[in-house]
Amino acid sequence: MLKVANNTLELLEYICSSRKKDFSLSELSSAFQVNKSTMHRMLRVLTERGYLRQEPKTGRYLLNWKLLELGAQVNAKLGLLETVSPYMEQLARETGETVNLAVLYDKKVVYIHKVESTHFLRTDLRVGITVPAYCSALGKAILAWHTEEQLAKILSAENLVPFTPQTITDPDLFKKELTAVKKRGYAVDIEEYIPGIICVAAPILNRQGKAIAAISIAGPGLRISEEKVAAVGELVRVKTKEISSRCG
Image 1 (cartoon, rainbow, N blue to C red):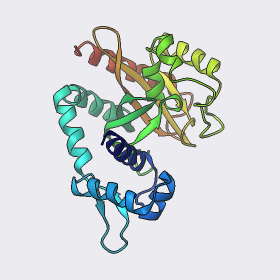
Image 2: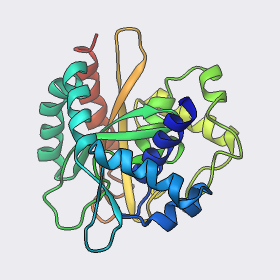
Image 3: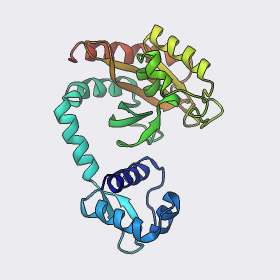
Image 4: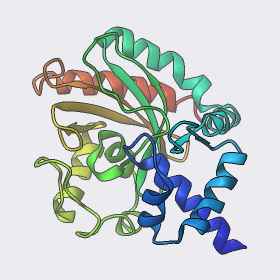
């Protein structure tokens, strides 16, 4: 029973983290190396529970709204979103760029809220998506407040896979990067995950000094040039410091 539940959750996480929009039964069976009847049973459970839906014409599987519903319930219980939203909206007005809120889950950051840029050209990372923590400003902003022991579980040469030529893949260099992040109070991702996109983030700390989330300002390098990064970083750092003072 536990194995079936674990496999079903792994399937759901795989679909959520993929950049693909929809999947066929054959594709998923091949990806998980299970026969089609076994995969069909897992897909049926997720579909019946509302986590997935099946396109009638193609038979392909897509994410459904249940995850957003659960995410909204979690946010409401944590109270984080209610506290953070006004600050995010203010940052979006002041910069004109997309503002994201994310938390760390395992070795990835999960986007849980965003305020879209009004520009036509903008980032397209949707709420619910996960991104490796090491190649995102959001992830680095949170990891910089981790202990050496906690980082050891996340960082290794095998885990640091390059997404672009700018991705930091050396564990020692990455640790130096985190030291710099903690010293200045904000993290920077200059095309480390998506070419052409620059992201600047700062952590939200609880009263124990633990980074519980992070906020980022993200946009194309055409608008957030490297010369503007320091000013943007200071802007988001000040806002997250205000938020942190309100977090328990």
